[in-house]
Amino acid sequence: MLRLVSILFIICLVTMNCTKNKVTTIEGLLQYINDEKHGLLKYKENSNYKFSLKYLPVEYLVYSELMNNSVLGQNNYDSIISYYNNNYTFLFTITDVSKQPDREAFISSATKVDMNFRKSFKLCIDNDSTEPVLGTMEYSGGLKEGISYYLVFPKHSHVSTKELTVRFLDNEFINDVLDFSIKQRDISAIPLLKL
Image (spheres, rainbow, N blue to C red):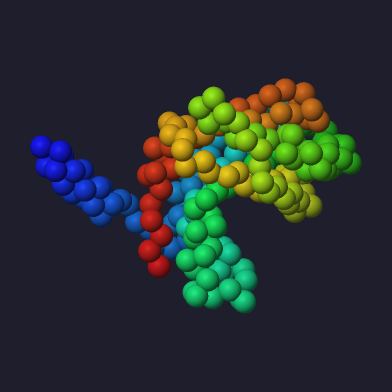
């Protein structure tokens, strides 16, 4: 009986893996990620600021790494995949939407968050929380585009969860705690990138 259940389980896994949606361009993958109905992009907003969190899938990160670094080639593909598979990566963006934005204050607050990113962000899974192992700030120069933080959190293989919650412990913008939750099933549903 156990053998039969095992065989059926393997057949189920193979069938589900073969029927997973596929996209053939990086643009198609980005379009999928940026579509709110897929659950990988979350927003919170008040009268002065808009906060967004986007889950960045491994395939997108590997593609970006290979395209942006001519030294890396296909030979490094497996090691890059292995690195990204051991982490959760998110893009967190703060945009000033106030009627009279103060560019200097906005940049100052964003810089303080960047300098304390390990205290400002937590990944909460089940009853555990962890700090990011890497965080970098990106500012394109305009308040409308906002300031973004790439956040990398380690994966813990022993944890099984239904959702990942990124917590922003804000002492600079709205003096509050903001939680952004992304369901594991939405991450699992991300289409494969087939180039």
